[in-house]
Image (cartoon, rainbow, N blue to C red; front, side, top):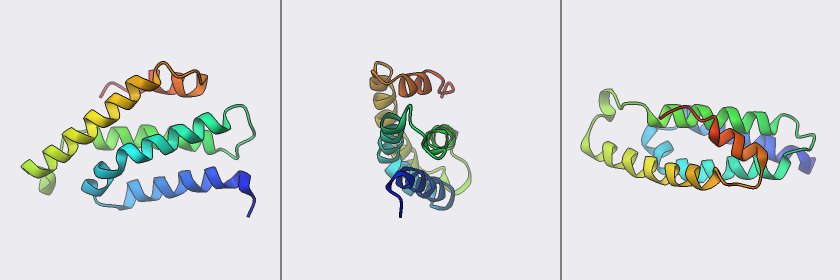
Length: 116
């Protein structure tokens, strides 16, 4: 396997997990996904990346939108609210930290994050 394709496949794996896993599991792993997506953006900026940077940006937007929205249905219990609150806190902290990133792609992506 070509090593230059690995970041793209990692982004595909994150996309699949955020779409198919239970919301609780995604919330519990969201911070790690966020760090992995930022790593892809930092590592591949300016390179031919087989669309990995674009997929990382798309994943980030989807993941943040999904995990910041109001909980509904079976997810509206106290335990899930606490999990969401912790995830939101951790992710917000990292987003604020990345606003000052020396990497232009990361900094611009963070500044474009929709109001949560």
